[in-house]
Length: 457
Image (cartoon, rainbow, N blue to C red; front, side, top):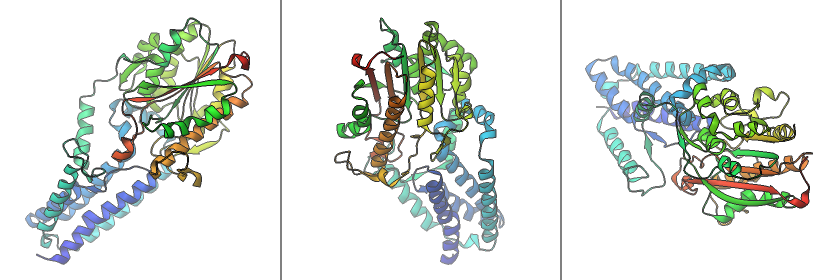
């Protein structure tokens, strides 16, 4: 057995893919454990295969590497959506909006890298590589991972040490196979819909803002730093109260929790959306004579919002495709219309007619977050919190609140009541950041126009 061949194969099948995933994770903004356990397993399988059939080892190595890297990339970038089989058809529907130039570039780069990897693999003596060092590494990493924050571990380290593309893919495949489709039930707690429809007199002009990943921390100073722009800039016209609503699920579940008072699983089809219409606030307000508008800075095809919004009672829906000339903001996940321009469009839509209801689903705070300016690293306003990720979080969410306050102050016709709420808690991968936020409740902020501010037009 040769240590040189061991080093060559270890570098090609473990080090190179690991470094590639780390670099691509930084480039595309997905987070996760550094080591994929499938890579040392692939090393072992490649050596064994090569000892049985000479050329089989190199083929297994190249195919296995492509599988491990591709699955970790796909799941890292889009796990929240990929594990929902109902969304797969929708991905195809808005394929014309995919960045095909970027996709072609990375596919070409991947093909070139795999070709080079195969060429090198065929030039080393794989059968002479040692098995024991990698077995020891595999067992050591697996042991550390099980002592970490896993479902069966003891939480001795900050986060999971390793992952497995095969295991994760199997879980997603099982979710696809057992997917029950769209399921809904009455939300067990309060919602915007239940609050509004229980009032004897409904305000004439209502603005709803679902803020992507707005979470509730046990740190009051941290929470206050995010809400502060609303209180400081709108105190003369609005009273501000902050409460909490229970949540479960991801973005669409958060929207339908507040708009319809429902707890959902899955993505509704057209018929599903029509079936829940009687439960939904837009349809009920429309029956009372309101002009109802739903807005989002992303494509109408995402989460099938184009059909969903119409089905649950919105007279008009405004998306990225409808806001030509608006400023484009780029997050680490999406490019779309900046929230400030969507807020402006929502207030204009709300002002039409004698009564108006406008609902906004924000875009800019979609995870994963990245510092967009030097000030995002400033931790001075959030008390003792010094975690860089949380400092970025607090500053960027405070910016959203500040942009909303600016839009309201600039509006000729102002809302009588504004509801601002989180859809779900921030989906951090690092356990300490994730557990900084309540995993069962999100903020529900109510701004009520003061009588002294005059009646909305």
